[in-house]
Length: 133
Image (cartoon, rainbow, N blue to C red; front, side):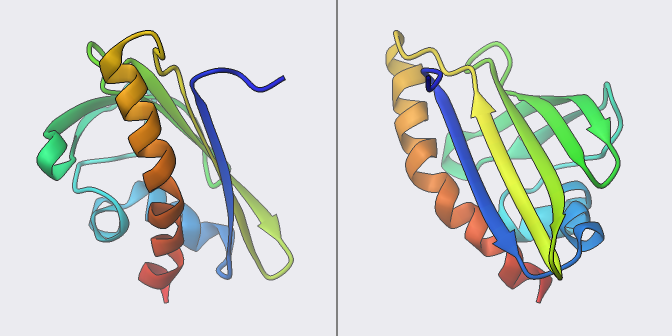
């Protein structure tokens, strides 16, 4: 059964897990493929992502397994969602998995964010490989 308010995607990236991990956790690289912000792989670290027209979104790192898993709250107090990245070696590259969950589909804002991010995430993930090349 698929969980309501859940976005799940995977993308094969033809670079080793350490490079993909850097794209998720190095603020300079992160800003090139998604959003500027002081992201760091440290549990409890609070940072803000600059989402342009959607404003500054607060985040807090919830779980880290170096080069394997990064999970953080996204927009607590407004969207109250969680983004979890999983990094798995696959052949000569990496399988990157995204889980974005917790959207309140009963609220207009939650439903709009779920639809917008559901449509936007595939192109965002596709940019990671080009930034690493």
